[in-house]
Image (cartoon, rainbow, N blue to C red):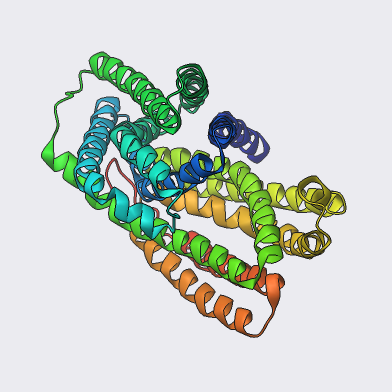
Amino acid sequence: MTTPRRLATAHDREILRLAVPAFGALVAEPLFLLSDSAIVGHLGTAPLGGLGVAGQALTTLVYLCVFLAYGTTAGVARQVGAGDLRGAIRQGIDGIWLAVAIGAALIVAGLPLVPWIVDAFGASAVVAPYAETYLRISLLGIPSMLVVLAGTGVLRGLQDTRTPLVVSIGGFSLNLLLNVLFVIGLGWGIAGSAWGTVLAQTGSAAVYVAVVLRAARRHGASVRPDLDGVRASATAGVGLIIRTAALRVVLIVGTSIAARMGDAEIAAYQVGFQIWTLLAFALDAIAIAGQAITGRYLGASDVTGTRAVTRRMVGWGIGCGVVFGLVILVARPWLPGLFTQDVDVRHMLLASLVLVAVLQPVAGVVFVLDGILIGAGDGPYLAVTTLVATAVFLPAAIVLFRTDAGLIGLWVAIGLWMLTRMLTLSLRARGDRWMVTGAVR
């Protein structure tokens, strides 16, 4: 008979097996993107600004399409839990075809709008030509970027996070090498950076397609597009799109409010938020494990196992949050000096880091439960509750801004946003309505 302690240890091993490689893949991307910025930065301030503007547009676009990874993970994992590997691969292929269709539509719709998009992001007359050049070329790589998202979802659903780590490192390494060759070696300027990104993303997409095709041949799954399956994948992603858009609103409004406070405030906020983002990667890795594990357990109709592993993952989230919070508090006296020598910025950052630290356990619960409910296919609930949390944040942030609460007020509003999300997610997790079992939700 399996003891509770042995069962917990087994869950821990499973969580770590999926979460550790997922964390590596999450961290690899921003590190290599920083290398891109360093290379383009040698071209001058205007090209670097153009990269920043175009990069924000592309990031927003891909961010809204992240449902291709999350939704595919949940659907494939359910089929794996139900013991239908052929069906799992078939569902993953539907997700990839959906990614290709969305990517093609974005190219057709996006290319004529490039000047308008660049202008909407506030590019100056000097920066705009560089931004337009980069964005126009990079849009050609959108289908590949979306296939990478869907392919990542397929492998995560198959309980494999190591292959996405390898592909991520390989893809971004190739991106770095191509940027050096095209930008510095051949002198193509910012266009060279864009082409390097397109080719690297295309290479990564090709690897994912090859892996999925090999699995399809092994399990006898058709690779032809199934309109009903593609339509089902798109429908399942609607809730996640709304959730993601609501999250994006909070990020954009937060930055906008900090910028309106003053130069010192926006500088301190950006540093504090970057620290928050780095820690979020670790918590998001547990959430990704939650997506894959939850989908598999529910697909196997194991409600008891789902409940047990949920408790274990929430425990991991809280534990990591407490550790991260303590690390921030201990390192807090020295952290500002790593980023700035401005006295005002350092003072504001010191105060902000206290709230960043206090919110880490809350973030641990929110990130993990968000991933678990995504794995359960509970997109509609996540859409509604994320909108509710955003509705709490927006007036709180505006009121605190107008009452001159400063940067601390903004972080308090973020805290209210996170607490609202924790409350709504916890209430859902305590019930049973989200635990719909079977190969298909």
